[in-house]
Amino acid sequence: MSDPDPKGLIRESYRIEGISEPECRSIFLDWALSNPAADPRDEIRVLIARYGADHPDHPMTGVLTAGLAQAGATGRRGGRRGRA
Image 1 (cartoon, rainbow, N blue to C red):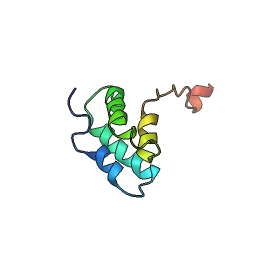
Image 2 (image 1 turned 120 degrees about the vertical axis):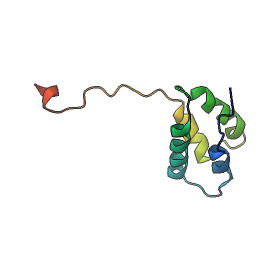
Image 3 (image 1 turned 135 degrees about the vertical axis):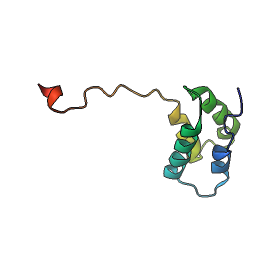
Image 4 (image 1 turned 45 degrees about the horizontal axis):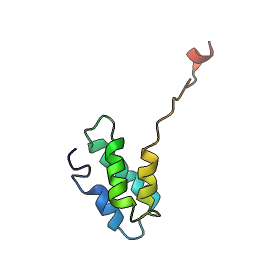
């Protein structure tokens, strides 16, 4: 596996004093969009081990942990065709 954070986005988020969860989510989205892996969960686990272990209460640790969750099925989204 190559470096899971080549741009240093996640690393830098841990260095920003007073960063909020919404800011961490934005950084995570940027990281995820630039990540070529089809399933980035292994890389997220590496990032949690690398940074989150020393900073369990940091908002980015929470965002990364949430990133490991499976996306649920959305089901029916509504509209006329769904009711007919």
